[in-house]
Length: 332
Image 1 (cartoon, rainbow, N blue to C red):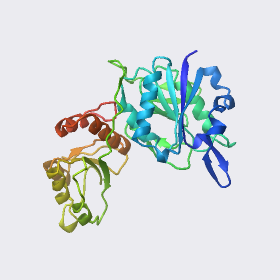
Image 2 (spheres, rainbow, N blue to C red):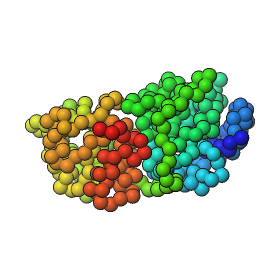
Image 3 (cartoon, helix red, strand yellow):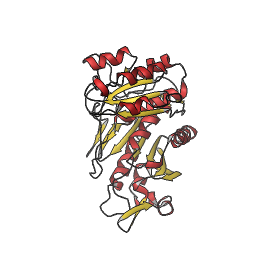
Image 4 (spheres, helix red, strand yellow):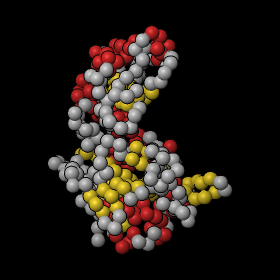
């Protein structure tokens, strides 16, 4: 049987019901999880590793680094990895790991649940069984397995708070669908080089959501001296206010003057930003902005954090950002 490392980080799957809410209960679930889902032992030889126990809202770059190092240190001993994780930031972690773990030759599957395993109507058992089985396949990337679907990690975003079908992959096909059999997408990557682990991230970055009547006075007063990049969530394919007091152009020019990289992505989940399509986008290009294409917010953000952590030259960062590094971006 294949050997799978089950890495526990917390999240709803590791919580217990308490009154009208839930709370993390690592003592109850760290050692007994596999025992409660006995079917797992029919799929693989499983070793559990309680790396940390946190609500996923409290995870940050240090946790991504810890996860990447954990996989690197155990890479030769196991055939695949399953990470139990809270749903709120699962897509961020999956995206970050896709850049930190380049050239994967083994599956790294993130999963969790909308309802704690301790509850009768939980989705945890199915997600856990599916994820362990996926970790025994020849998948060579970071993925999210949830509600009988498997998504490329850096193409995934959380779409629902309450439905069991919590995630979606707006601009990339599902990697696998799990029914009576596992139906795999035939167009999946194979590693061309040895595993390259670079878990460095720089959080000198902010996300700006454009909205009607955005007060640009606030933006112009921002101290940009310690900021390295801004992700702008624009309208449509790269639109933003251009006229009068609400014009974003003066702020974009200020960013260029301060060597702050500006990336445009869309507030719409589907399709891609094209800064050549409308006058606003073309103006953005003139002041040095670049397009995030069809990347999710999670991928756009973690990709920039990873590039900032590993490179210093802004021209190199921009060039790499416009390329697909881990399947996160469709070609133009």
